[in-house]
Length: 55
Image (cartoon, rainbow, N blue to C red):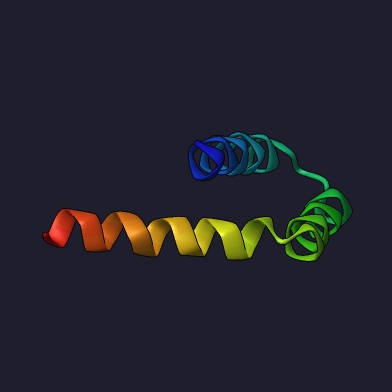
């Protein structure tokens, strides 16, 4: 459940960041994602989903 919520949050943040033209906003958002650990959680969830699909 936690992974699903983080994945949805990351998808929302990515969508919002693509709609912005301000490069400083994008860099700040990218830094926030890395610092908060969301990037690592997303990569972990992605790896788990790939392994589940392979089975």
